[in-house]
Length: 149
Image 1: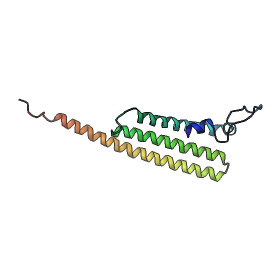
Image 2 (image 1 turned 120 degrees about the vertical axis):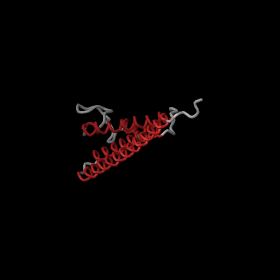
Image 3 (image 1 turned 90 degrees about the vertical axis):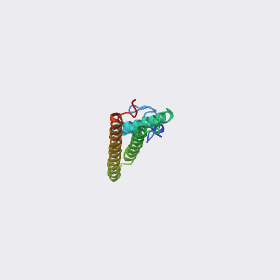
């Protein structure tokens, strides 16, 4: 999806050359260059996050480990968030309605808040588990090793 949006941007591309534009260049960029920059940042982030997920899954890493699962989960959140922002930017730029822009902005802010909360909670849970693991390892090292004859 991210690849398709990059090569075929919303609004299409110019079909002819004129003094103001070149054939094959994005109409979206021509009309909304600032928004288009954010749009492409979000789209590229989503694309790279999706590729990272695929590479991690086929790399043979021990997926059963909680730490690797946490990494995959965070990258998945990044991919989903980036695609959501890409969608919101495309919709807001293609529909010049002020009320639509405000609604999309609210959804973006709510989405960022939800993703931030999820990342925070899961990071805290991961840190708590890591602390418990370290404490358990320290206790095991301090215990005398069984029969020393």
